[in-house]
Image 1 (cartoon, rainbow, N blue to C red):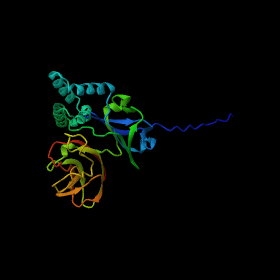
Image 2 (cartoon, helix red, strand yellow):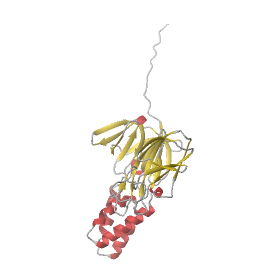
Image 3 (cartoon, rainbow, N blue to C red):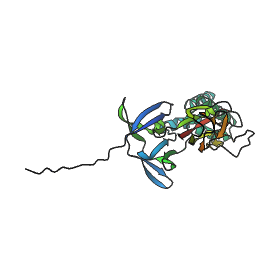
Image 4 (cartoon, helix red, strand yellow):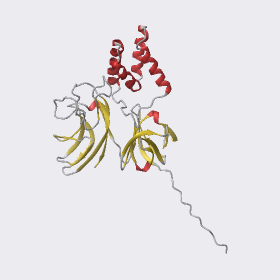
Length: 297
């Protein structure tokens, strides 16, 4: 009898990690991410982060050369000698929304009074039409051990879905990738104010442990972009007559209101549902941006 040689081949399969993609237009798609890792260029060098260690990825706004060229051209047209060109440029820049927001904001200090006036009008209109502006200036990866920002090496990632199979998704079209182990809640700037609360659909009993962490940015004065940019801990360097500093993330269970900020680890004092909101801007205007809130219960 001829002996049989059995070979056992151990193969490390590609990760098949369930995640939720948030697109730039606000749509949500559930997929499986099949990348082994994500490479992030940081000030400390390139990091190779395993997909299975990642909780969330927040992507900075990406613009194509073509869009940059058009936006730049229309910005130049804002100071054209032709009135119709200036009018058309203002209309076009508003249509570009998030892509025009920052470059137009740089015009607010222009010496040309009409350019400044039009830039102010464009910023106000964009802020009003597009509540969910992407305020991230760098790609940010939150892992189980740390959070770090930089720029992703690749321009797309491999995913699959029961409806469209396996495909490559461009980062240009994405706002975030939220893995199922930690689906963050997005508290947009529409929840800035004293009377508006975001319903988390999370119910707690007295004595339950509540662990929350928040990231993101809210522009409290969009008329001058990024001058008064708040993170979940709020802003200290502006006058404020309210109980809580502007832009800070607040929570509420029952009638108890408490500060969440960037990190919250405490015990529920009452039975009830958790609600969140962002402390109001001292100017009482419409803000842009938002915070991503992760939770453990």
